[in-house]
Structure formats: structure tokens, C-alpha cells
Image (cartoon, rainbow, N blue to C red; front, top):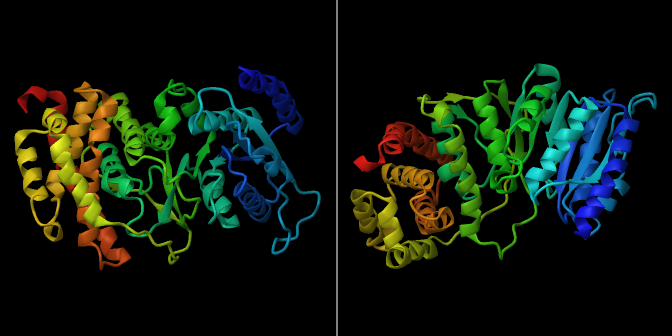
Length: 428
């Protein structure tokens, strides 16, 4: 209760600061929660980017904090960019303003971003970008790459396109990217990238939606931002930002919980947008602007053997749940794969795609508890990762991307199966 009262009390002070600023051309939002180790670097690089590439614009950096107890907001306000290497500009040009504010609403990144959007609209910002607070690889030119397409080229939504290690981002590579592409017909490579930018029109659309007090906003805000843009009919693009390096995830975090959050948000968006995605066939590229072409990525170590063990254990412990979700022929195929020697384990694309679509249908019809359903998906996901890792062990980046493209095409080809199951589940 005390925390809520403190947050409420802070709002008049925030409004006074907004009024004093009088307006802004560019807003950079940085949602945070206990990011003291990294947020100073993020703020300084954002300042450098704004000063170097948009020196005449009225710019505001807004830190939307979720109640950090490690001094994150104070670090934001104390951060001052090192002027070395910057273009020298007259003092008459607009300085970069900073504002750190707590947000109201349910805990989570969604409420933080909503706060940024509301403040950006009050300021009349022509372009608004959001940047994660744990970034270690941010550079000043990220600000230009994110903001310029909105401010100068008329785009309404800008998504990041990162270079990643071939075994990094496997949830994105196996489900989120290929399924988003098959559903909505646009090839946004990193739908959950974390760094985005928006026009005034896009902000108005977001703020008008009734999702801000839901689990989608709490756990799946990045997916929702992308999906809403894909369904909007507005102008969208991607920007090449190079490698994304950020704080390592908490090793105590549960993979099943992550899948519940990511896939739960994606499947919930399918419910909201059924009328849109059922009309879409195939997919088209989305332009990628600027950015470096060759960057180094951090290595990712994986143990395929342990993942295969998880699949085999799943047949012992989860077969009852799987049999409620998957048709008998899929169960039979999965069992055949699981019984192979580990070195020969492979999960065929067609089977994998049908399994993902079957779980989406079960989520839609609430065949069982949605939480239990998505947790039961975990061993199957690990089976796909193990298969992918063994197949791509010696492949280079181009070969891996070609392999993911093949998987995406299977998602698109199998989409009639999804639509049939969605409309007539009893037939299966």
C-alpha cells in the first residue's frame, strides 16, 4: 500500500516536469527494474546518439521505473555523457532532457511502456523509441537507426533486426518468428526484440487498446507491440542494429515459465486477431534499413543430450496431457523419434509445425489449464532445439538462416491445417 501511495504522490511532480519541458520532438523510453549496473551506460549512449544525430531536436529521455531498490532512478539522473568524440554543436541547440518516473498499473514491462507512451503523447513527440535498460551493446547510432525512419521517412513502427549466435534465440527461431510470419504475412525477424520506435499514430493506436491490465501487457508486451503493428496496416520497417549483448538471464528462471509467458502472449493475440490472420496466405519481406553487416556474437553453449533426455522423460510423465492435445498420428511419430539413438534424433519440420499449431488450438479452446498446457510443451520444444543443434553443429550463419527460412516455409504451408483445426476441432 505504501509503495502505491508513493507512486501516486509522485505523479503531480512528474506532470509539473512535463509541463515545464513544454514539448518534445523525440522521446527515448527506458523501462527499468533494478538495472543499476547497466542503465547509466544506456542513458549515456542514448544521450550521445541524440546529440550527435539530432542536435536541433527537442529530446527527452524517460526512465519508467518499476520500483527499483538498487538506485536505478538516481543513476539515470546522474548520468552525463562523455563529450569526447561528439560533434561540437552550439549551445543554442536543444539540450537532451532526462526524466525518471515510477509507473502506475500492474507490475511489468507493459505498464512501464504504457507510461512512456502516455508521457510521449503529452509532450507531442513526433517519434518515440523504447530501449532495454540492460543493454551492453548499445551505440549512439542505434538512436539514429531507430528514430530516423519515423522522424524523416514516415514509418509508423520500427523493429530491430539483430545478428545472433546460431544457437541463441531458439524460442524466436522455432516458434515466434516463423509463426508470426505465417499468421500475419510480414517477415519481422525479431518480433520480441526489445528495441522499437513508433510514430504518433502508432502510439495512439496502442494507447486505445484494452490490454494494459492483462497478462499480455505484463509478460508479452514485445509480442503485442509487434502484432498490433502487423495488424494495423500502417508503414513498418526493420533496422539492422548488429549484435545485441545484455545482462545474462537469471539462471534460476524456469524455461517452462518463459515459454508460458512468450507463447501465452502469442496464442492470446491469435484469439484477438483471428479475423485478420485467417485471411492471410504466404508472407512478404519487410525492408531492413541501415546498420552494420558483419559483427561478432557471444557464443552460446547447449547440451543436446540433456534435451533429448527431457523428451524421453516427457513421454513417461506427460503423455496423458499430450494425448489431449495432439492427434494420434503425431503422437506416434513423436514416439518413433524419441526412441531413436540420441545421435540419430531428428524432429521433422512438418511434425514440429503441426505440434505447435495443435498447442495453439488447445490454448484457444482451453482444452486444459493454459498454464499446464504450455508447461507440457517444454520437452517438445527442447526436442526441436536438440534436433536443430545437431543438424547445424558445423553450419555457418548463412546456412543457419537458410535452415530457418525452410522452417518458416513449412509454417506457411501447414497454415491450412491450423485453420481447419481452429474452425472444426472435432474433425481431428
